[in-house]
Length: 392
Image (cartoon, rainbow, N blue to C red; front, top):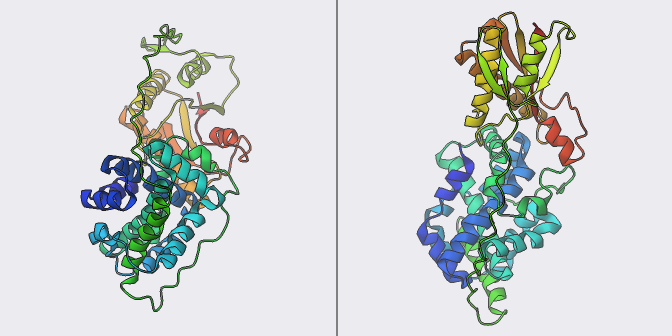
């Protein structure tokens, strides 16, 4: 389940039109603000707050409490028309946003406003609309698509990999995303028992009513002028080509490798009879996976090609691929992710003709850090894939 793609697809043109009318912003600015910033902000907060199966259970409970029948999205555009009960709507909408972002809610609204080119009051309104939209989406998927806590937890974990491409500029740094200790408050409990069936519709509608009143107190809306196109920057001199070296393997194969790369160092180690005996560990410096999956991207497959060629040239060599993560998220989930990614590298080697008895894959999750997980720099070092030569 690609959580972001499905969430984005659930927003219809009618929904955007109705939200634009409610906020007083243009349709295009509303689309940029809602789909390009407010929804990604809510999703980012949910990934940080509810990752892990226990968190996913809490998120499902909140979604079902707001939208018990899973029908809120069926005509959400109509639900944003003003109605009574603004205080209740404001408490629910702002409560969920506060649960996600805490004291950073106001700063997140600044990010949304800057991204969409709209007033901050409109950005706050869009965020309040995005919250029930997101909860309604989760509730509907649970009702019609069989979404359970385990699947939701996995989707939230996978979505973490997409956030740099989804989130508007400045959001992740504003939230200090993935930093330990951020937003530790418990989720707001929303009692479901005895809740009238019509309340989810009123909640969604009243979010707009309450915030629209705030918008209108700001005076007559002024169109945001289009950004001034800056003069084209001077063309910088071409970056010098990365230094490479042709490496001749024992079977006559020649590879063009970067001297600092894993494959270059591996070939040198296997060639050198005076090198220390195994085990010898190397860390992949440029190994990436496609967003929200354990599939290697095209650039990484080039590294696999080089690695397979080296192992073919040294038929006695045996290697183990080790996957490692930082300590963000549930330990069991990290262990599984590291295992799947190590096995993805192993399987790619098999596909290139490396015998199965010569390559294996194992995941260690967060159990073998090489740096402190208290800083982003340390966590980045711990998110790694190693290659261990066990025989040469």
